[in-house]
Image (cartoon, rainbow, N blue to C red; front, side, top):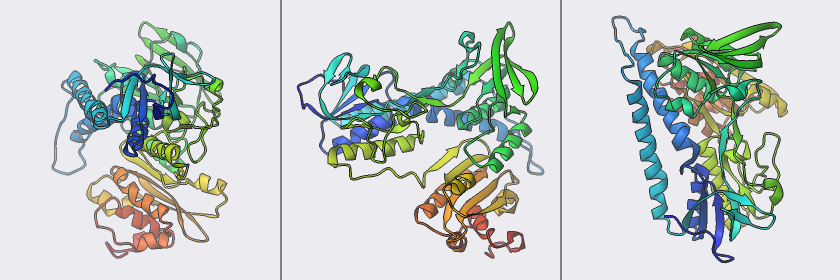
Length: 472
């Protein structure tokens, strides 16, 4: 339903800027409380996740995982082959899923909430008003949920290069022979492995290490597994310049004291994401930002301007769709009900959909030390997890972080082929303040990946190599 948002003063209890996951979460939360809501969208409805992020990436990652596993020969006596017969069919199937979910989870939902008026247009702030297409929008409270956009690093020569991004990489009608991917974060790692499994020669170049905010043991192991699949990974380098030739692109880098040229047919930028605040005129409205460009908010989702809140990727933190929806619900409830709720991310799980998957929750070892804890850690290679042995795939490890004094769990970090489905158990343990003793004494089903958490918990004080199966 499209409506005219420019109505008399007091027409709306809440205006929400942004029609992605955070915006819809805020609007639906407010409507369920009886509020009149103006939902202002600009561009394709549904935002990053359903259109160009989570949904397209995960379905194509799964498709190329089928290719990889079909050609694996881990089991004696088993021979199988998988081939990529039609890339355009893979892309078309992805597009169909995106369109289906955009329609059912966003466009169709507007009809379910008659108190939400959807307004298409560019939102901006004047000193005194919120404007949509230059006309005032009358609302008692405002939530900014405009999401994020691809970051373009400052590399000399890049402006003249027709580069790909994580958005356009999933839209390619034809695969290039080779790609040079800049960036080693979770998006870069996922896209790089997906393309390599589709048959593209992939080179990763990054300034730090892979997944730089995570555990170094995980980063080092994942780099090795990607290299085992044929990807070239160059980390800890600096970018000097990029040029284009008749055969592709060339990136000049500095590896320590050694200059080097990395070449490929296409260039793909996966250098993080920036808060999408273009055109909002935040400074005019007196809305502060932080160093990475995100809107500054407190733990109740307030901005520096009274009556205005922000949630999701636009805040520059916790850029995951479920955290965007969570923060937006809090912002909407606080805007309408007196700021009674606080944002709590101490047990926030996160997953990188590489293979093996990287799943984390809570503090890293470095983060726990920085927070002042006397830290104890356990590190369990996957070769000690019976599920991994039975699957003949022992790639990975589990690392747990705890307070040495109280034995309370502070963080869990899993690198395993099925690691994503195990992290919520660790999140619940951390949320409930469990110790590693309590986690190690819980009953876990045998021959599951999640049983590795029990074994990792026992590793703090036992040598699990000396335990019989299920003897813990």
